Amino acid sequence: MNPNWDNAELIALVGVAAIWCGIVWWQPAQTLVAGVDGRWSTSKTAVALWTTAVLWAFTATLIHEGGSGLSSAANELNDQYFAVLGIPVAAAVAAKGITLRNIEKSAAIKKKKTPADPESNPVAGFAQLFSNDDGNADLLDAQYFVFNLLLLAFFVVVFLGNETAGLPHLPSNLVALTGIGSAGYLAKKTQETG
Image 1 (tube, rainbow, N blue to C red):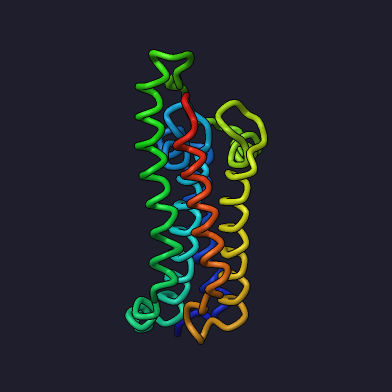
Image 2 (cartoon, rainbow, N blue to C red):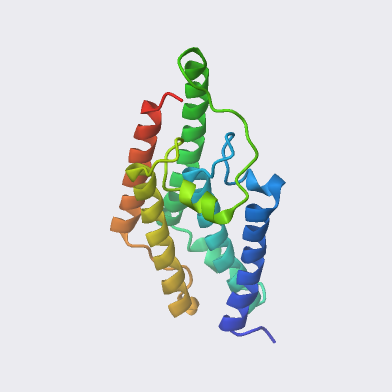
């Protein structure tokens, strides 16, 4: 007998929570969300959040359905999910390239990102998601991350409200806002020099 939805979601949540505990407190895993300078990366964290949210929904479906519902759940990955999973990945890859280019430029200019151990304090790390490399609050980092959090909250609430319907249909306007936030974030990155 398969567990009910509440138990399946709880079991899946324990697994995802274990992943995040590893990311937050185990130094080798912290590089999944931290940049070369040790600061938590807004784009890398968005990738990790979306990946674990979809993993949680798939795992809960797998546990509840005893493996039989996973293929139908995977078929529900429509263009919206490719966008919300792909946009943060594209932003993370582009931001990494921009940062590496800026490091090369800034060595000759004024400052350079120096390699550091990842931030191990989750509160400080979370605050870094809303700030620039100098530690000042940054509107474009905040906008990019907040729109992703808003869409993630919608995903979780709607999935919890009607698991039998599978992955929820995401509002196109919210998906577009995550894309706009990503574009602004990357445009800002191209203007940074260090």
